[in-house]
Amino acid sequence: MYSFEEYIREGEPNKANKAKAWKTAIGLQKVDGLDTSEYLISTAKQNIEGDITIEDAKQQINNYYSNLPQKDDKKTEEADKVSVRITEILSNNAFSFSPVEYISIHRKLFSGIYDFAGELRSFNISKKEWILNGESVLYANFESLKNSLEYDIQQEKVFNYSYLNKTEIIEHLAEFLSNLWQIHAFAEGNTRTTAVFFIKYLQQLGFKDVNNNLFAENSWYFRNALVRANYQNLNKGIHKTNKYILKFLSNLINKTDFVLKNIDLHIDNQE
Image (cartoon, rainbow, N blue to C red):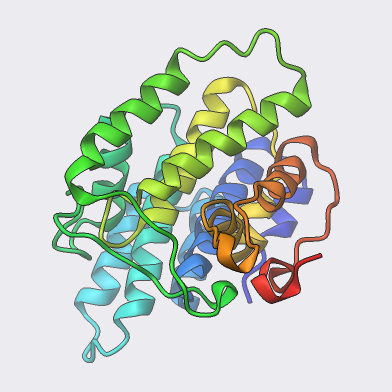
């Protein structure tokens, strides 16, 4: 199990910021049930210590997998490569709140991993969800993906936050995040792409001192909360609800301490 807490606690800003970025990046692999290698953890610590740059870290990981005699564990390779790429994105200040940036993040994360990296899907999808007893969220039609992305991001871009208090801001962000994720613009990698884009957007809004442990330790809850925000079955009395993603965002931004348990999101465990 990886731990960068010693770097976060010691108070040296550069090391702490890099450790938080790595911790978030590695934790986000859990949304797809992926685990990183010990080599990735060792490489991350070298970067945090300042012994190597993030570019060096990327090259080390690429070389490591190029030289492996057996390439059976593609999932670990994906987790390692995507982790270092997420860390790189989170560690720089460059960001544009636009559909082009959203698609670019997917391309950067999954280039060489998915053939369709940076490409909007050309077919409709469904995904069986444990918390829905095998049912799926209804995702956007592939024919409207570009328009849906442009609409959601443009609506958010012109939104006026000036009359909202902190609670109302979080409620609005939850709605935006939920709608963006529901589009599911790509065949794979949607939650990780959306999370990175959203973190960068929060930083642009001024939320720089958020609780990064949330994405590091509760990324599966994050995904399941978005599932519940976008699923309804009125015949069974199940309604879309933002209450779970609101708990996550409140803990993230306000540093509240709502208990986040995946079992609570299962449709069989409703109040």
